[in-house]
Picture 1 (cartoon, rainbow, N blue to C red):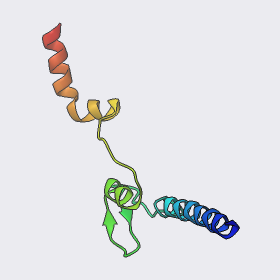
Picture 2: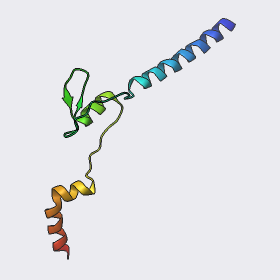
Picture 3: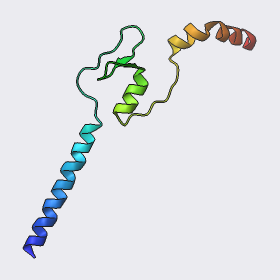
Picture 4: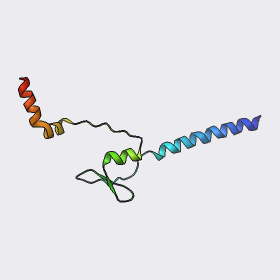
Length: 88
């Protein structure tokens, strides 16, 4: 009976260690070479990928896109001013 309990305890410990190791595999760490201009990341094979693609492939992260106020103004400023003019 004691042997069965010891085996069960050892299996549970091994399962926990494997789960922790698996969690570490999907964690990004170290240096990521990133382009100063376009923000693409160079992978281990030397290919450049969009940051969203790289992180999605190397982690559990999922992206949802939005637009910050500065980019909204930069890219849609005239349109926004036009809309605001119609609301006035």
